[in-house]
Length: 294
Image (cartoon, rainbow, N blue to C red):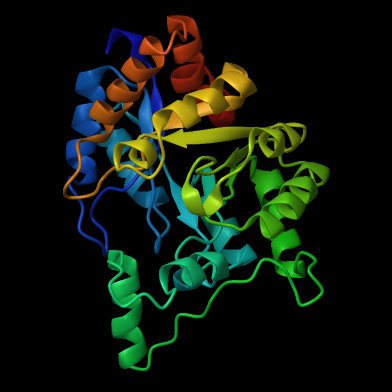
């Protein structure tokens, strides 16, 4: 954990939440403090977490809890007003659609009757049975260009110097979004889950996105749950270089380990792969602080 002093995990699913979680923010704040890490980002698929983050920062001054908002239908989708209010409340990171992204819905509801559905999909089914709408959230219009609301959100991000995270967007959505974000002055961009099967980016694609100032996110859960061989992740990390990569966990699930443990496990894997301690700190500490303006 000495190696992770001051580290940030910018992808943590903590309670209180609609979905079952391993720990709540109070426990997470204590764990971050005990581990000597710098902080963590509170991700919810449904709610802005800026208020929760502020409370945790007051309870645990050594833990820099980061508020976020995810642009699913629960907050009005691609909603410039919601992003503006999140920014005014101190949120630092804006996730584009996850469970309400058309590509994600298509992957999850693929017609396989034996497929184990994630918790959010079960909630969606329950809502549909009750006649409650949770529409898919579109970033592109029928002509394949970014919607006006998307451009407005990008302007809000630039104004508040917030971080754009691409979440579960398809490649067809991600590339024009990142290019336009760069054009509009969004300085901090994270390409989420670059090695995840449904959002997988080749090394060449990652290098192209890096031209617009984006950094690539690699999460513990992707290889720890067998979705990809960690050798592929390490190959990508080495190809991009430590200055263009952040390590996160995507943890908080009931059956998983704690995020601070996941960060330590990933750091150990990187060291074992011949990556230097300083490069590990670059990907776990320095890059995150730069994104957050620390």
